[in-house]
Length: 622
Image 1: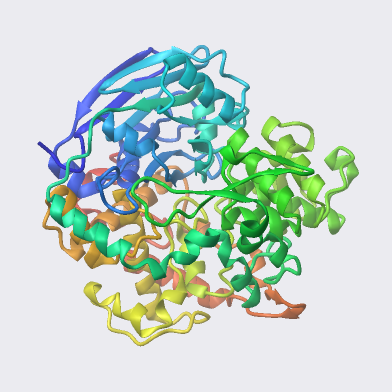
Image 2: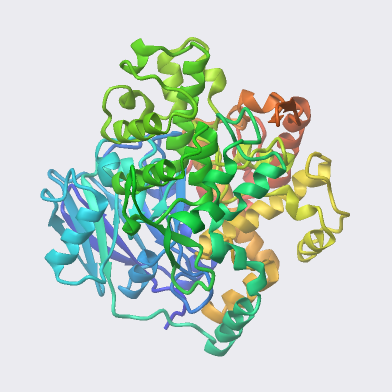
C-alpha cells in the first residue's frame, strides 16, 4: 500500500458528463512529488498546443502533494493549474486550508477537468466516487451562499468546497478559486477557467486517512517544529500583516503603484492595528501550529463578516498602501468582496492602483471611467471598483482584463505604469530593495509570484548561506542590493527548492530546509531521497512549466521586469535604489544558463530535458 499518496487521479469530462479514474505508480510520484509537478505534467500532455485558456478542451487541474494531509506541520496545501487567461502561459496557484486534505481522504491525489457543461454544475466527490450535479441554483451567488447551500443539499456541514465565485462566472482574468471561503488559489486567473467550464464548485468529503511510512519519525518532526515557536510567534499574534510596519520603516512597502517604499498611513493598516481593532479570532490550516489566518469583523461603515477571514499582508499592501488607502475597514471589506466573489486580491489591488496613477497623471479621465474620480487614497472609490470588476460593470469591465490588457485598450502611454511580469501584477515585495528577487520575478513561468521565489535577505547572514551547503554552495554573505554572478546561481537553486515545496504540498512558513525536506519525505513516503533528488524534482517541475510557455509562444523576451523598476524607489520623498537594467539583464541571462534554459527561446535545452529525465516533454513532441 502506498504511503503519502493515493495513487489515483480522477478525470472529469463535463461536456460528455463522464468520469474515470487512472492509477499512477511510485515512480510517477517520486519524480513529480505532486502539486506543481503534476499540474505541469497534465498541461504538457493534456492541453492542445495553442489552446485558448477558456476553451472547453483546456484542462483545469487540482493537485495535492505527496505530503498533503500527512501528520506533518504545514501539510494542508494543494495546487491548482491551467493555461492562464491572464498571462497566456503556465498558470499555477497554491492554497492552504483543508480542501486538499479532504480530497486525499476521499481517495484521490488530483482531479483533472476538461469540457464545458451545458448548464452550471458542481462536482461532488466522496470516498472514491464522483458525481456531476446541477448547479443552476448556485450560479450568481456569493461563495458563502454557495457553500451553505451545498452543505444543506448534501446534508453535511463538514464538506469542503472549492469554487470559482461570481468573478469566475464572469470571466474576470484574475478570478481565483476559493476554498473554505477564505483560502485562495489566487494567482493566474484560474477561477475564470473554472467558470468557463460552468463548474461552479468542487465539493469533497472523505472518511479515509493519509498513511505514512514512519509515524514515529513524523511525530518527531511535529515536535521539532512545535518547539521552534519563537520563530513564528509573530505570525500567530499579528498574522502576515505584522510585517507592514517593518517593511515601511526600511522603505520597501509598495506605495501608490510602487512609486514609493514608504506610506504615511502604514500604521493604520498594519497587522498590529488589525489585532487591536478588528480581530475577533485566529484560524489555522490543517496540521499547522502557527495559526496565521485572521478573522475580522465590523459593524461600522463596512459590514465585515468573519466567515471570510481577514486580509493577509499581500492584501493590506495591494488595497492599502499600493492604492494609498489607510482605512483598514475599507481594506478588510475589499478583501471580503474578493473572497465573496472569487478574485485575486493582489492583481485586483494593483490593477486599481494602475488606474489611480493614470487618472492622476491625466492619462485616464471621467470619459474612460464612466464618471468615476479614480484617485489614490479614495477608500470608497477603491471598494466600489472591486465590486464593479467582479460584475464587469462599466469601467470595471476594463479593469477585469488585468492592468496590462486594460492599458493596451486605453493606450496613451498608460502601459508604462503597469507593474507586471508576463501580464501578472506584482506581489507586495519590491525587487529594487533586493535585486535577486527581480531575477525570480522576471523569469517566473507564471508571471510575477512570491510563492516560488528567492529573497536576498536569506543570504545576508552566516546562517543563511550555511543552509545552502547541502547544495554545494560555499559563499560569504551577500548584500541584497547586488547582483554578483553567484547570486544568479544561488537564486536558481533556491527557487528549485521553493517549487519542490509547492510540489510536495507544504507551507513556505515551515522551517523546512532541504535536509528537513528529505526527512519529511522519508517519514511520509518511505523514500530515501537525497537533497539533490529533492532539488531535481523542483527543477524538473520548473523546467516543464518553462517548456509549456515556450510551446505556447513565450520567449526569453518575456523574462523582463516592468519599466517601473528602472526608476528610483522613493523613500520618504527621496530617491532610493533602482535595479540597473544592464546588470539585471546579464543576471537573468546567467540564471537561465545555470538552469539549462536557452535565453532566447526561454525553453530548457534538449540536454537539460534529458538530464532531468523528461526528454518526452520537448516542445516538438509534447
